[in-house]
Amino acid sequence: MSRFATQLLRPAALASLLLVLAGCGGGQGDLDQWLAQEKAKKGGPLDPLPVIKTFETFEYKAQDLRDPFGASRQEQEEMAAADAGPRPDQNRQKEELERYPLDGLKMMGTLGTGANMEGLVKDPDGIIHRVRPGNYLGQNYGRITSMSEGQIDLVELVPNGVGGWMERPASMALTDTK
Image (cartoon, rainbow, N blue to C red; front, side):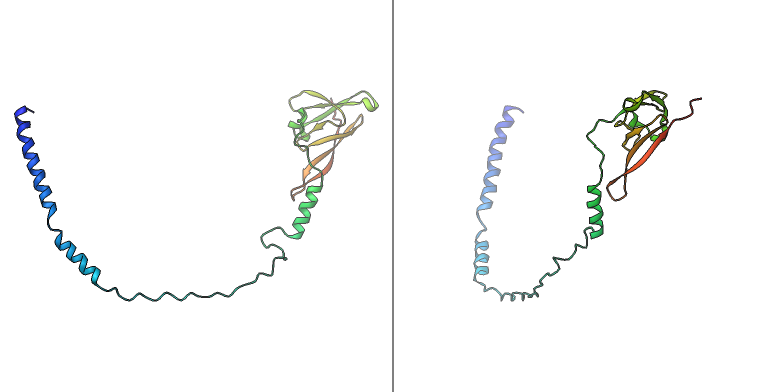
């Protein structure tokens, strides 16, 4: 913009601003008059407050009865029995032969005699492992309790169906190695 145009626009903008401000100053008298009239009017009657309904008090006397949403006494007894029974040791490090189901393992023979006897167990991958009483095998926490030249006896822990565990005897017989 040129300097000349700027000099002409300044007075025109100033004049229009003064006209706008002059228009805002008048016309408030009728507003004040209406406000005074409205304040002088009396208000209408208020509606009465609603009647508060009183309710009968109720005394709950069934606090000593069984919770209808909780477990029954029989279920509580079964859960208590399940908690009291045997449990697998979840903190124990699993042994190599616990990766396989018991029916996938084969007893191949024994080494030694008496208390020093070790069993030879073949896994599904064809690897033969040495086991002793106290070792674990199978996927049901099977712990070897005893062994003889022809058989390994163990106790498995299986779920009992009500949240607990039960012991189940199992054995593994020597397989024909031919």
